Length: 555
Image (cartoon, rainbow, N blue to C red; front, side):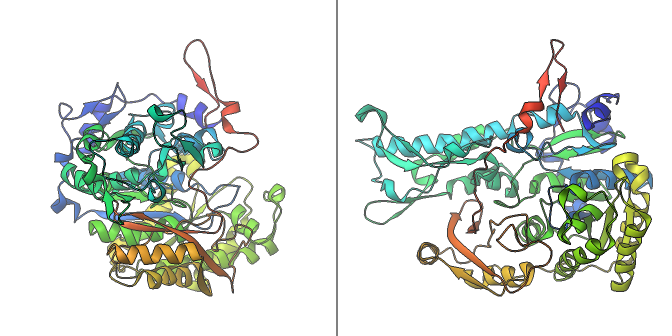
């Protein structure tokens, strides 16, 4: 059966029962129908959170075959619950861009899913819509101020970096002209659209710890300069109050359930190749406040989402993960070893061995943060005994724990070995998290550290535009901010064609965006875009609904 067919066979529990299992009275949650709810922020207890064991699920460099990181996260949480460890999985919300594009939804797969999968993948509780509206409200306020004759801040339109956003893949919106149509329609200027997941407001929502922190961060959003070179922030336009009001419900994390009836929290959805790639601090702390174990994931490979999880989110919120589960598939390793995409289900020991350096590099990167890694082999029916043994032998040679996980087919039962390995690592207390760099380090050094240490680059080049941006950052006094590098997910380098473990390559930073409200800088490398496009055959072609309201085609 397909994922959506499996999801439809499950009899969902009322969300009040899930809340009770999580540890919150059913009168305290804010219900969105029978199976979804918002949790008030008052249920975060930082003291209790300190005693929860935070487990990060990451992956090797992703391939078109898919690695199943979210599926693994959900399955692991089910397995830990089966071993009597009260566990909550905390995930990001799906963006409609991938849902209708090429990647599909983000609710797991097979018998390792969060439910109701149709609702979660399509609109959910409206958080993305609220973020989109808050972002575009600021854009409208900026253009209104430029148009104003009485309250103008004399913003130079040529310096405005704030675009608009929409939660769809739409390449035609990357660069647009606004203000056409005469003097009553605004001042013409060039701008563009990003996808909502790349919005700075998404990043802010995911790093804010409460409503007042959210409002303060929104006020710090850098807009551009006046004609006399003075910086302008959102607070200068008195925009932060109204923006925060639009986000009053979106800031609250969402409670749903897994297939096996365990609590799951889903909140926020920044991509890892163009943003910080992890769910909200609020959601993570909420899970940790009510669970012995909290399982979360970071987008794409360890070089993207996990690095940002450690260097940005963990430093910002003072989180200390106890272990990293590195999701690995035999298909992906064969692809990194040169096997044809169409032949990945064929046994190919040679290609598998050639692909192992990609796994090896990600494992090395995990140890740089002083956190213990565990290899999770995400089992597919095409995997052979000989291929599985190759990875187990590799892990043994490195002294790294490994587990075969059959979570798609068996859910929590298929994750029992992995769950026990996680428990063993936590109970031996071998991890002592440390970040890769200190925030106060020079911006170029921070970028170089990530590029050379995590990606394996020889050095970093900067375009003239990026060098100008470095000077701007220095003049604004923002050198102390961490860096959130935008880079292709397909390779450790900034060239998507360099698979495996590339060496002797150069990372090129072509520009650097400022996210002063979120509290980080965004160096943009290679050809990465913050507004994706649809593929030749978008997933939307398969999605349909009948007269009874039954949705089909989601995956």
